[in-house]
Length: 210
View 1 (cartoon, one colour):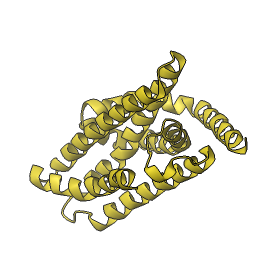
View 2: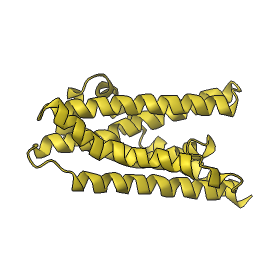
View 3: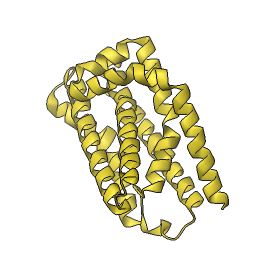
View 4: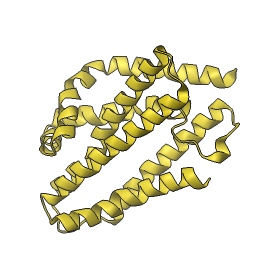
């Protein structure tokens, strides 16, 4: 009962936060979609102080909804979490998410290319926030719609995983294009491997092994 109460309270809190930030979300949504379509939109977004600030605030506000969705639909579901209470699963999911973010920040600091301009590298790095917003909104919409029409949770989970993979693939492509604007495609790919493949690969492997 306590677990469900905690999750319900967090869900209500998330809804209130989203409602308070609704104007900002609507304001940045065209730019977020634009970043999906072409890589130069990420440059334009980062060049706008207001849009980049609203993007960062929105991404931070969507962390709780994302963790709730990932927990509810078992998007991160290693074997050791089987049979655990829902609030414990949520805590582990949130801890894994925070660890993943910190790991990404560490790799971003360790493998920062010296010859690349600070602006280009910053744009590529912050693109993750943009695509995280898009991913979270799509997952929330998918989960809500499929729950309303009575789709089985396993089917919904599968659809969400494919959506996540698709959004992440587009993010990798756009980040490579941003890097390639300041270096060769091969060098951009090497940076991508160090900055994205290592932390994300570790996350996927942890779900498969444990």
